[in-house]
Image 1 (cartoon, rainbow, N blue to C red):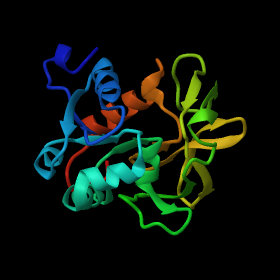
Image 2 (image 1 turned 180 degrees about the horizontal axis):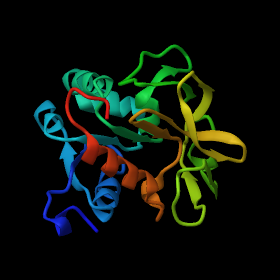
Image 3 (image 1 turned 180 degrees about the vertical axis):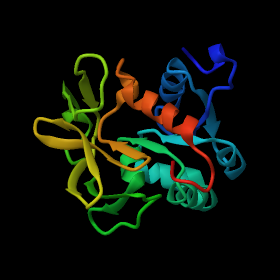
Amino acid sequence: MTDRSRGAAPPLVGVLAVHGAVSEHVDAVRAVGGDPRRVGSVVELDAVQAVVIPGGESTTIRLAAGEDLLAALARRVRDGLPALGTCAGLIALADHIAGGEEPIVGGLDVTVERNGYGRQVASFEAPLEYAPGWDGDPEPDGVFIRAPRITHVGDGVDVVARCRGDIVAVRRGDIVGTAYHPELTGDRRLHAWIVGRARAYHPGTHA
């Protein structure tokens, strides 16, 4: 049953709309009962109850979003805004990027290596193994496209999913990052999670 069917407005979930698979995330959020909003400015970010950072090129995200929007995003994520980052979105949320690059947004105490599974020609699909508690349809394949590799996980960061033994999705509180692209498959458990966290979100709290 959706929020709309109960008479309540669905939660507003922003999708950072400067680059990457924006439409696919918009469709996925809508499919699980959220109200997706494309975010390209600080004003648009201020209106939402959660945010999705799509894949694409993390360097392009840094340039296209601009300093003001990224600073506002970092501040809101630090203050408890639920966030889901996929592929380049994981890089954006990582506190540590191999090579010493400054964090883009931050919030996840992980170290990631760009293109850790190879360049575009090395893209692949492989079965995922979700951790207990992440119920959903039968275990799906993950789509890895120039995917980052998680090389270190800090204290307080939980493993959400593995692929071939590697950690490929992590969570700290209301932040989840994945090395793969759930928006390109029928796997909606992470979008259902972000919509649920948006529904529970209240500014100034870490619900």
